[in-house]
Amino acid sequence: MTGPRLPAEFVWAGLVPELLVTDLAASLRFWCGLCGFAVAFDRPEDGFAYLDRGGVQVMLEEMARPGRHWVTAAVERPFGRGINFQITVDDVAPVLAALAAADWPLYLGREEKSYRVGSGVARVQQFLVQDPDGYLLRFSQPLRR
Image (cartoon, rainbow, N blue to C red):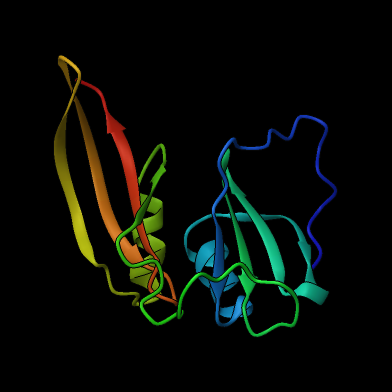
């Protein structure tokens, strides 16, 4: 699957995590099919895809492929221990519905949470889910006062 030619207005995110995955096809079914990301571009010969969801970007690379992988220690499931990726969305409901239709388990169900931010408070609806390799994703919908 080769992604579309990048439009001139494509904006590269300032920080883009590159996640090693065991099965790129399975990861794409999760990230794109259930979580609403799209392939901005890919390199199938390298087992690589660059994903975008409204400016939230992530790179996926299949680690079984030959080539260079920047691995600093043994990679064991669940991947990404100690980190969660917050993904801000306008509405968590469509992602939750897609996950429920696929019978995909949630790590933490939908909740409303308030966080102190400076002298104010930010309120969100959020939930957490793990991708096929165990990376922890936190989908967060800002709430108005």
